[in-house]
Image (cartoon, rainbow, N blue to C red; front, side):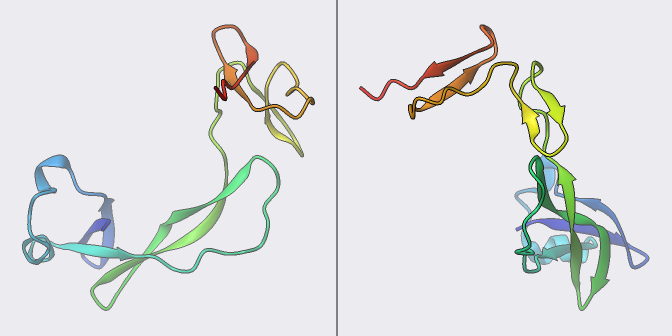
Length: 117
C-alpha cells in the first residue's frame, strides 16, 4: 500500500521512507500518513511513446489521498535511442523484420536474437 504524508490538508510527501516501512498502518495514520487510493485508469489510447501515470495533483478526502491520471512521456530506455514524434523512443538500428525475438544490446548498439534454446 502506498502512503502519503498529509499536513494541513495538503500532501507533502508520497511514499514511505525505509525506516517507516515496518510501522503498523495504525501508527502511520497517527503520524499523518494516509493511504493513497487508486482510481480507475483511463482506457483511451495514448500516442506512441507516452503512458498514463498516476500522481499529482493530489487531494485529501475521507482519510485517504487521491491522485489524477496524467499522460507522460515514457523514460528513455537507452542512451542511444532518440525521440521521434509519432513513434516514441527509437533505436539507432531498425528492429529486424524476420519475425524473430530480439533484445537491444546497448554496448554493441545492435539487436541480439533471443536464445530460445
